Image 1 (tube, rainbow, N blue to C red):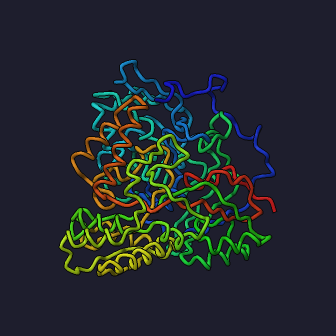
Image 2: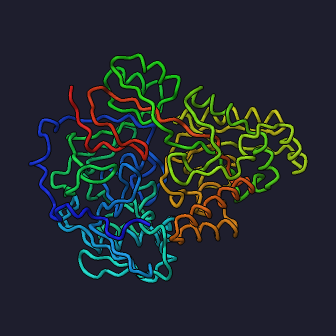
Image 3: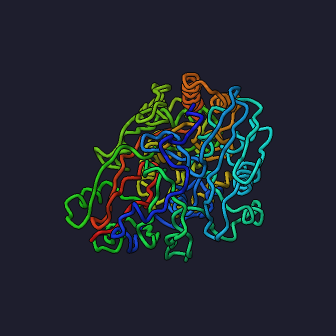
Length: 514
C-alpha cells in the first residue's frame, strides 16, 4: 500500500508558472514519430493498443501515474486520504487545472470519466474497482470520495496511467459519447489534439495553458514541459520504410524496429540506437470461447511443442530477448517462476501424445498475426512450422494491426493469436485478468484468485496470490508466454532527454537541438 499522503511536504501547493524554471531555448520545432500503423482509437477508455497510449497519453492525464522507480505518484490528484479501516478513499483533486476547451477540471469530470470507463464500457480494472465501491461521491468541486464495501489494495493502481486506462475527459463529452465514440479529444495534458488524417498522421500541439505540477519531473509524473511545438505521429507500417526514414532525417523516433535493422543502425552516425531492459512480453493467445482450442488437451499439445527460444530468435535475433517463465518482469517485485516446468518445453513427442489424446482430426488451426510488428509475424511463422511438424493443420492469416484487433474481438474468426503485453508495474494492470480480453480466459478459480489479489491490502499476500494465478495459467494452458523483447530505442541525435520509454514512450520534456 502506498502512503496515504502522496504530496511532498516541501512542495508549494500552488501551481508554478513554467517561465521561471524552463529553458526557453529548448522550446520549438516538431517531433516526428514513426508509428507502426493507424491507432484503432485515440480513446484510452476503448483501446488496449500500445499505439493508442503512445499518442493519447500526451493529450490526456490520469488521477495517478508512476515515478522513475515505478511507484505510484499523483497526477491530477493533489493528495489522497485512506481511512484507517480502508473503506474510504478520499481524493483531493488539483485546482486550477484547465481542459483544452478552456473549462476547469473538477470532480464531476473525474466522476463521469470513471463511470464511463468502469460501468458503461466495462474495462476490467474499472469493473473490479466498482465491485468494491458502494458509492462514488462528489463532495465538492475538487473532492471525490469512494466509499468501499471492503478494502481494495489496488485502488490507485487501477486509476493510474496504463493502456486502456481511465483517462480524464470533460463530463460533457463523456455524456455525449456514452458507450460510443468521443466527438472530440479534449484532455488536460501538455499537448492538445489538432487533427487525425487517415494514413497520414495524428497531430498534436503544445497546450499553452497547461497546468504544471510543482514537483520536478519524475518518471511519468511531475512537471511536463511541452518543449516541441507539435508532435506528428505518422503511421509507417513497413519497417524498412521506418528505418530509411529515420536515416534520411524524416523521423525523430521509431515506435518499433527489429533486431536486424537495429544492428545496421548501430553503426549509423546519423542515428542513436540503444538497447534497454525488456519492455514487452511476447504471447500466444488461445481462443477459449469457441473452436478447437477450447480443448485444454489440444492447448497442452501446443504448450508442450512450443520451442520459445526458436521463436524468439526468429522474432528478435540472438541477444535481443530474454527467456523467462514469469508473466511479470524481473525488474518488478512481482516476478515469479511459478509454472516454469511448463515453459519452453520444446518437446514435440509429448506434443504428439497430447494431440492423440485430444482426438485431433486435422481441423485447420487459424493463427492471426501482423507484419506491422514483424516480431509477431516471425513468431507466427515459426509456431506454424512447429505445430505442422507434430501433425497439426495450420494456417497463418496476416492483418494490419487495427484489423487484427477487430478480428480478435470476433471469436469465430481465429484459434490462436500472436500478441504481447507492454511492460507493467503491477499484475493488477494485466489485461488477462479480464474475462473479456484476448482469448476470454474465464474460470471460477481464476476469477476468485484475481478478485482476491486486487482487493488484498497486504503486499506479501498479494504476491502469493499472483504466483497462484501464474501457476494456474500454466496448468490450464490459458495462454503461452514466449519470452521478453529487449527494448530497442532508435531516435534522431537532434532530440534530447529521451528517458521515458519502458512504460510506452512519452515525449514531454524531450527537446530538439540540432
